[in-house]
Length: 220
Ligand SMILES: [Fe+2]
Image 1: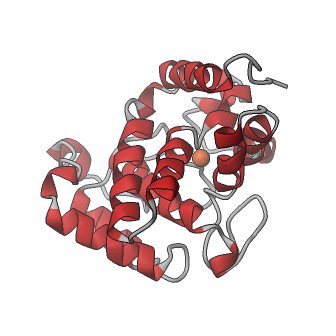
Image 2: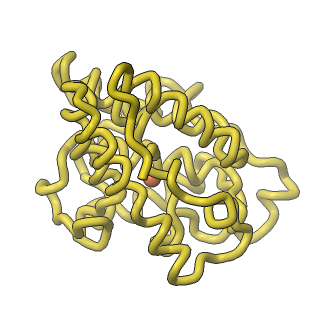
């Protein structure tokens, strides 16, 4: 199990995230975009500057635990079998443990937010199946930003979706997966700054019948 370097755990965590970006090439820039969107949502919701900083850090490091997932699973073009799914769905727990054991107060603080970034309001997320407001607000914000960006980029197992298509899918999941207040803030952010919206995928890709991105059986 990877342990963050005690002398500079944040630099080590960032190096692991950079390494992950090289391995998971389909997700280039994902972390940075999640940080931007999550921060905008948090500001719109009026979170304190302290909490906004926690949002930024947790969004940046939300997939840290993927550093322990082998390439064969992480970049598999096929649907995940049970064993691979068990491995990949452990990444929030692994990342949270690494942060909690880092000895760095800022990283320790965000560990629960990283742990819960794949929870859904209905309780069918993971790893704990938390329901509604038992999911930390910061995790609920990151979850939506993460889902939006993940759906905008192709994955080995599905095509990219356009902004209108993503908004359509996400709005149908409000109250089920996404916090209604977080979604309202997200919508307002997107309306206020259309430059944040993903560009439409190439027509050849858009022409395919897009599979519903965010399939619960596949991690983002
Ligand atoms: Fe994740």
